[in-house]
Image (tube, rainbow, N blue to C red; front, side, top):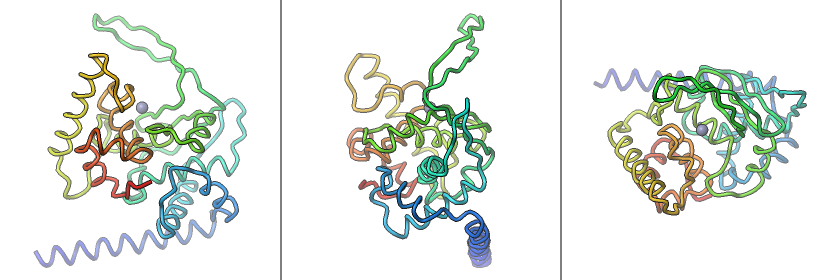
Length: 267
Ligand SMILES: [Zn+2]
């Protein structure tokens, strides 16, 4: 047992050393200019409440993100460094205490100027395929790109709207899909209980579904009942933008998300 503990300590120490070495190389080549970092993060509401150490860590992770992922514009949208930092910093808030490996398996972020149209083929319950056109503000593909409306990213970044942040929502789907399936259960931290996570989420999901079906007003966005995957993404938005609402109406989910994200929720 002692050998195992020593080995694991060495493993984590080696991992941390490698991370620091990699980050030094990335920061040398991709250091975010101070004035851009300050001007962006000073206005991003969801980052308020992070202390200086956390902000420094977030800046490193944002630099890592910009080096590892491509953020490009669609339909001629010119993507500036300020726009890229705005997206990357909020995405990295999710993994600030989780680790960058949660964003493995994909590389591309695509920005549209505004909401965008997508065509999806849907099979109905008698096996007939229907082509549907939807207008979206964000979309996250399993093992594929994250697609965002820049207008909506900007609005959510600079306006406080409880339970609403399209960047957090779409990148929460990436955490969920890290193990190859988007089902509302991302790979949990060592020591977390899958049973407790399932009990908390399924209980809150079923309760919200009943409230919505009964036409009752709810404090959680109805979009959450679309599926367990959307429930996780929406409640992650609440965790970072309106933790008091989440704690009051879904305390068990709030507890599980605190164990998972390990972030203070006093913003
Ligand atoms: Zn979603």
